[in-house]
Length: 124
Image (tube, rainbow, N blue to C red; front, side, top):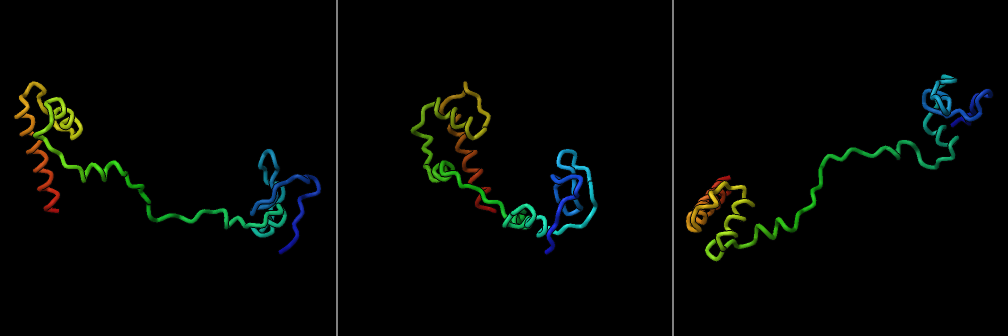
């Protein structure tokens, strides 16, 4: 490790691996190879620039949505729902229904959709 000093004509020059640069313009004042360790010593920085670089993360961590788990375990009793609740459930499940249909017709559509999805999930 060598002790590095800025050029005499620009005492506030900034050291970079390419050499000394002007602090305001970034212009390369004196081209010289400076090691990262020498730059860290000059800046009185105990850690190295290599430690500042975060390591790439290969896996993505997803937070589990507690509401989703509760919803999956929740029993859905279509028989005890009012017509308004059935319509709201259809909207939540993104199932198109005719709001003017009878409660029995809406319930049948929801049951068909629910059992169809359950059957598709079991096959995979």
